[in-house]
Length: 408
Image 1 (tube, rainbow, N blue to C red):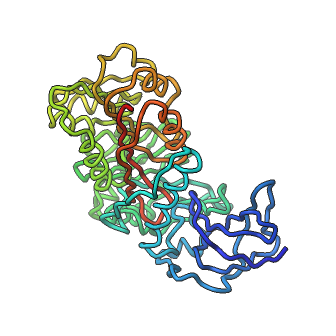
Image 2 (cartoon, rainbow, N blue to C red):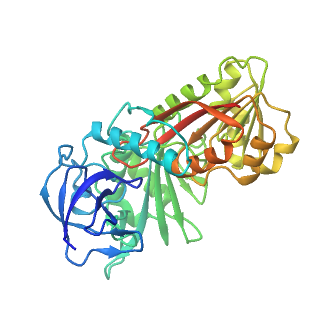
Image 3 (cartoon, helix red, strand yellow):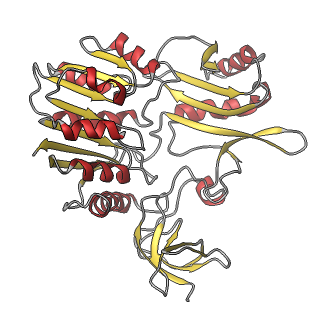
């Protein structure tokens, strides 16, 4: 078995894919199509139908290989990105193929690779970053940062994240000088821009209080880096209000807005029609539907998100519950928009959509595999009228997909 492998594709998680001499697929991180790779000694892990390995040397570079600009990506093996070593056009091509291959392989659908909408920005687009905290050395001074892809329990100290908004990174550079003021037992720090572009620092800790929160906030403010400080989901320093920082929001708000606009546009004229918005979050899709004259019923399990929607989206009906628990109580819909988490549709939701098909159905997906599974289940009652992929998180393997369906 030779240790020289030619890379022919990119897998869903971002690894390059090649073939061993015995024909078994091998997944190798940080490689790109066209690379010829010598495997690192001792890294090959053979499974029944596939293998994993690490690249020891790139013997021949593929045409899409570029130099990653982020030092953490190279030196720390940062797992936050998977594709910085791939030219952006090739990233888009890989994501199109990932979606198409997954829909054909898992969904058993006869479908071409979808068109993909490129990102507005390739860098500095993230409005949120989560960092883990680990104590390092005898002093116990915390290391705050991200995980290497090949050492998931280790944390390297973060200096800068090239896909995160400059305003959050400027805040982080000042915070690093005051980590001794964090509460005891801090385990995670989240930096976030809200919808009013105010910055928030969310701290998770095992301690019973954050005694130095006012000093921490004052030090940031003195350096011109004002922020609202949250501890255990409540504001402890800084001006409160604004978007509830604990509620789920998309990491790339601008691209998420483009996704929603295209998805809602596929429904056509919905004036006077009842439309379900399932897994509706903070009501962004509901707001578009209300503007189009629809009678919207939006459901989400996050009570905080529903409270925000109720206060900021007049004209819609918002229900805090799991979608599968309330479907039987909702008025019959003309159309349904679903935007489930990575796990896809809960079985009872799929059963309702197949047992009583609706004229129009829009599926917004953050995971091609569960999307393909659910489309295979829906295929008995629906036909696909449109598919489009969206590159909402450049430099990562993540891709968002919207599928429009009509009752067959």
